Image (cartoon, rainbow, N blue to C red; front, side, top):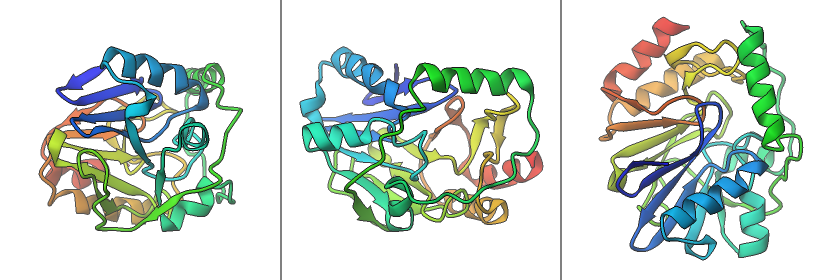
Amino acid sequence: MELAPHLHRIGNDVVAAYLVDTADGVTVVDAGLPGHWRDLLAELAAMGRSVKDVRGVVLTHGDSDHIGFAERLRRDHGVPVYVHADDAERARSGDKPKTPVGPLRLGPLLGFAGYALRKRGWRTAYLTEVVEMHDGDVLPLPGSPRIVGMPGHSPGSVAVHVPAVDAVFVGDALTTRHVLTGRTGVQPAPFTDDPDEALESLGRLAGLDATWVLPGHGAPWRGDLAEVQETARRAR
């Protein structure tokens, strides 16, 4: 689905990934679940593009519901996959610490589980090779994405700022639809390694120039980035 000129989303408010389309090709931000592969191909076709136009995948972090088709792009099509150095091992199937589940409601939980099942979330294809990136890097990809370190959800969580499409992709640094409760609006994401650190990291969004805030779970959000941290704090 086209969100704005040169900016597309695949998936939905349960799990989402994004495409940045420029004259130089396509940058994919996050890779959803394995079953989103067909969604990727369909969206590329609707854009008049193909897999051959994808120049790279940028992961906001290394969790399984964000790396879905990344290894397939890397292995079968030679597309480099970028992940922060502190999450590289997680993306390669390293251990993820157990985190408190917190509040949940049966309906949203079953909806999330059912969607993940339909999108083959049980067949995680971990990365075998990654390109490590760091806070402040500007990647040599369409849109010149700039990496903003957002540790907390995971050690190597990042936001991906792409001024060319007036957007910042935040992964699970925040959510606008809690997958376990169904609650909507800007709020902390579940399954976060260090909730206090994650909340502190949201302050780094305040200095960015972007209209679109695009999470891995939930609807796109448009508003004042300087207010995001306090909004999430009140929602805890």
